[in-house]
Image (tube, rainbow, N blue to C red):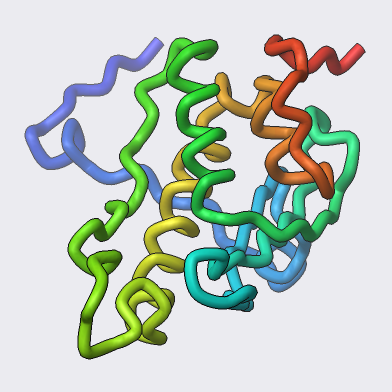
Length: 166
């Protein structure tokens, strides 16, 4: 039996990575969850005015019964999701983009919360929020997240709990 003596160079040598084939590079990833927040639309007039966003999801994770979905959500729906997750799950829920109270004051010289630049900034913040939340393995089992991403209408009277995959 031969014994190898390690020099400082061999002890800290890097492990050679496996060569990636074209098939590896272009095949679908093992598990993926893609969520986009897009297509903001403003509805209504005066005090009844609001903006909603399309929330589009694609996944191959087994915990989601629907592999592709598209729903429209308002900022208040994102607030509902955050509150539900804070109350029922064991995860630290990231913050939402701010409410922009100053932009809602009357007698402004601009459109306030309905200005294109503000809507786009909020859209990016909401997309970042929902991707952070949905990327967490514990959050992926929460009924409220599944309802938020997949159901056309959120049932606010639902019974909180975990999704069963069996």
